[in-house]
Image 1 (cartoon, rainbow, N blue to C red):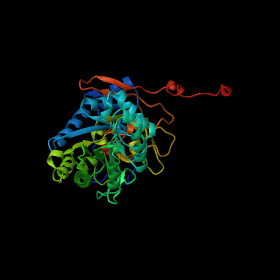
Image 2 (image 1 turned 135 degrees about the horizontal axis):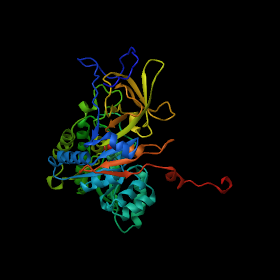
Image 3 (image 1 turned 120 degrees about the vertical axis):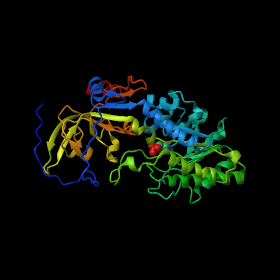
Image 4 (image 1 turned 30 degrees about the vertical axis):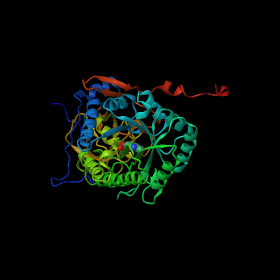
Amino acid sequence: MAKLAYERPIINRISAGIPDKFGMQSRIRPIPQIEGLSVEELMKKHGSPLFVLSEKTIRDTFRSALKAFETRYPSVQFAWSYKTNYLDSVCRIFHQEGSWAEVVSRFEYEKALANGVPGNQIIFNGPHKTRDDLEVAIENDSLIHIDHFDELYTLLEIAGKSVTKPKVAIRVNMDTGIFPRWERFGFNYENGEAWDALNRIMLSGKLDLVGLHTHIGTYILAPSAYGMAANKLAQLAINLARKYNHHIQYIDMGGGFASKNTLKGAYLPGTDTCPTFDEYADAITSALINSEIEPDHMPTLFLESGRALIDDAGYLLGTVVANKRLPDGRRATIVDAGVNLLFTSFWYDHQVVPAVISSQHTENTTIYGPLCMNIDILRDAVMFPLLRPGERIVVPRVGAYNMTQWMQFITYRPNIVLIDTEQRIHVIREQENQNTFQTSERIPQYLK
Ligand SMILES: *Cc1c(COP(=O)(O)O)cnc(C)c1O
């Protein structure tokens, strides 16, 4: 038998995790494989750290979300939220599944076109669209979701000269009984601003008002908030039908469904508190079908769900660099993947587990990343076994927002691999190198 690694005994104050009736939960389930492929082998071949995406999980999750809505409502259309994960391969999987594209900048807009999305299947959201962005979107017949009056006035100006009538919707913000209220985006419902904007659009005669949009926030744990939001948008649709005999084509409920990650400070784990797609779908579709909207004019239901569709499909793999003992007795483990790669560790208590467990002893451990920054904490206070330098860790559920919000700070961003549905591995984004940065840097003559 191999000699066990020595671990110095220490006294613990309980601060990691909540004890249940059996006491402290100290059982850790390692993740040795992803989609049947060994974590160790993946990293030997493609380096450490490494992002891994499962195509099967993406497709399965999307299909279960679509099913939840399609079984409850006559016409449903998803649009993939590019900013959640705009790796081209990821977007193309969603487009293959039937998703349109939801973009919030020119960069994303151009990415969607390059991914083969027809202009009239691109929803252009966001508070910052330049005049040129709007002109291009109009030319391509895209759906422009207006955020504020200045944007509306610019659109009216352009529409006066343009041959095609711009297709527009307004984004509406509102009280849905939850906090924080995302009031900075769109037109407010309660104070009449949204209705005012709709009247201006209708009376101008220059814009084709096709939809109504809201995105009430993100990681919303209360399906009832969506019911209230859908109710309010339905009311605007009814008012438009009454006053103008104008029937909008769609109601876009945005995204914001929670994923199974655990928010910092939450009492219960996200796996226990996250509503199902069925619960969200029930709240939204009930509000719409029970509204006064005439049966012949039921709008298509658009959804822009981001994190709930991709979080589970992503894994971050890393390697232990060292262990040390902090002055207060806590164990610190340093790994080669930090907040530079895992932006969401600022608001989630990410589950971090070993690929393989070599010791059954767990201890309150803080897992630090590789950066020279005090805030580079991958996971604060977690019960963790002792891992030796060189041993591997796995962070599941990282598919949303990390591969877009990561930062290039003092290191190269690593490879991203996709495991397809036949267990083949594809590098879908290569690790960066000196070249990545030298192509965009320019050195003035006198410094050469
Ligand atoms: C970010 C965003 C989404 C996706 O949000 P999730 O919380 O990831 O579901 C959808 N619509 C709009 C307008 C967004 O800004």
